[in-house]
Every structure is written in C-alpha cells, then in structure tokens.
Length: 347
Image 1 (cartoon, rainbow, N blue to C red):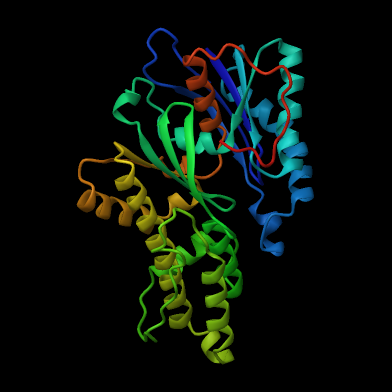
Image 2: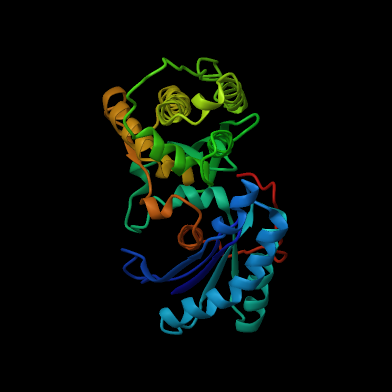
C-alpha cells in the first residue's frame, strides 16, 4: 500500500510517500518526506502571516508533490491522507483542495486527519507495536499553537484533560524571544542562549503559572508579561548584556518546562496510565526531553515515556500518513463524503 500525505496546517508545506506491507505490518518504508519551510519569510513579522503562508502553500505544494513523487519512484497511490484541522483556515484549505483534486483524478480515497492526532502517532513508526502495552496514556502536545494534556484510552479514544487558557507554550517562547530581540522562532533561539555560560547572575526568577492548581490547564501569558516587565525595568546597557539575556532565557525556559512536567506527571498519577507520550514542536527542545526523562524515570519508573525523533516533532506529513494507516488498520472503511478544512477541530 502506498500512502501520499499532505500537511499544510501552518507555515510548513509538507508532503510524503510511504509504503506499507499490509501482510507483514512490521515497519513503514519512507519513500520520500519533504518539507518547505517559510521561516525566513515570516521572520520580519515575528510570527505567521496567514495570507502569505497560504500563497506560499499554493506555490510550493504542486512542486513539492512532483519532487516527492519522483523521489519515491512514481508509485501508484492507494490512499491520500491530509490534515483537515486544527490550524490556520486559509492554509488548511490549500492542502484539502489539493487532496480532493488528486483524489478525483486518481479515484483513490482520502483520509481526513486531525493534526493533533498526528503528533501523537508520530511516536509510532513501528507498526508491530502492541498498543495494549501503551494505552491508557497521557499525551502532552505542546507547540506554537497548542498546549494540551490528553488522556488516550485507546486508538481513537481521546479525552482532553487540560489545555492553555491563553498563550500556547511555543507562542510564549516566540513572544519572549521577540522581547529579547532574538531571532524567530523564539523557542530554538532561547534554548541556544540558555546553554551558554552565565558569568554574572542576577538572581532572576519567573512565575510558574497555574502549576499547583488542581486542574490540568495551562497559562503562559503571565510568564510572557513577567519577562516583558523585567526587561523594561532594565537600562539599555543591561538589556543588551549577554549574561542578562542568557539568564532570562534559562529561567523562562525552566518555568515553562517545570509547569509542563508537573502537570503531566500529576495527570499520569491521577489516571494510573501505562505511558506518557510527547508530541509537537516544543518537544524538540533538548532540555525538555532531558528533564522529562530524568523525572519520569525517578517518579514513575513503571511508566513508559515516548517522544518522536526530533525531525518528527515539528509539523510534518509523515505523521499524517502514519495516522491514516492506523485508522485503516482499525477497519475504518466508511470515509466521510464531504471533506473540508476545520480550523478549530477538536479530538
């Protein structure tokens, strides 16, 4: 079986071809996996400019499809998978319309895929995995647009336990980076600065919003504001001081990671799960991975921890194709007749 998948929920145009042996079901063979990033185009805005992103998707998607198809050896497509939401409405429609046109042309079915679900199953490229040993699980999806704690009872059985009430964690990283004058996106820039030596510490500390509340929700707007006020309180010389920038980055990153870890472990204990699953672009952060690995091994030694390869943490179409195949394996033969973009789609 050959699956062609499309992901255009935000600013990255992503396509991939994968091959699966339906009899062995042992491993997905990646025939091609391409991403066209728009980071350089959106840098001057300090965030995603949706209409510009839509235009770039419209320009790049047909070209990327032809390139990916050639790399894959021009295979016969058996199934098309496409992200239908959540995401930016104009961007989603580019992928959806392309998938529908291709489906009509080739007379093959389309699997509409939830972007968040894709981040969950980016962890499971191996198809012979026994999900009975994985679920129930707590999944933390954390990216530029999403911060959610999800109880995964089984494949396709989800319950959102908590989510951000304002800024997502990745959005908070970006806004802090903008305040400090760092490059976009803010997350990688802040992580890079946080690893550098700090010769003159000022004892800066930032709040860890909602960390000890009984719910599983998040809020990062207050942290972003605390960093902004701290920055404005400094003189111009201090604002440009390398030690100051590095300390702010280190402490802000620590606050975000500590909140994410505490809430995730709390949920895992409360629901007595077998696994903790991480997904989303922020989980590419090395310090986050290191902190989760160390603390979960110490506090929850019997709980499995899964996080995707770094290249599959950020948006990609491979995760969309994999998720579509898992749906196929679960005998989901009845596909919706009407496939459309849904920017506020929920699990």
